[in-house]
Length: 125
Image (cartoon, rainbow, N blue to C red; front, side):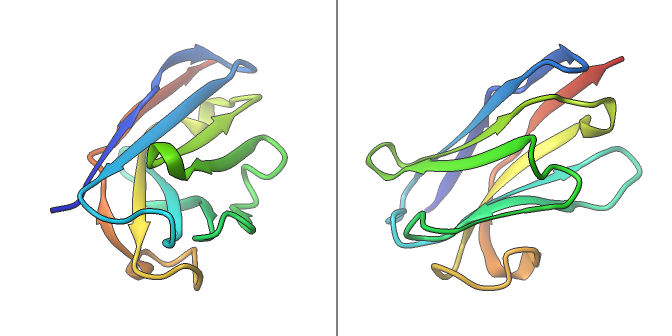
């Protein structure tokens, strides 16, 4: 059974940085795309970033372009989300997801078969 465990969330002030990690187990990791989504109270889950299975392509929501960077370390079965210049509107539970293919429609939740439980990111003003 696949498990995804996020870590690295916390409380920071606006303008500061956090790095989220997502460790995967139970399934081969290197050939599959990985994504980050977030969900704030009262709002729908939204796409944040994704990285292709071979790590050669990355994709970002417009709201985080230039501030967030997704990366992966296949040797560690881990995907990261480096979040810089955080804003209060970035406050949400961040979830990582393992896709069912190496590439595709990264913004769509149906591309992903497995999800972590999430880690809370809170950005104060």
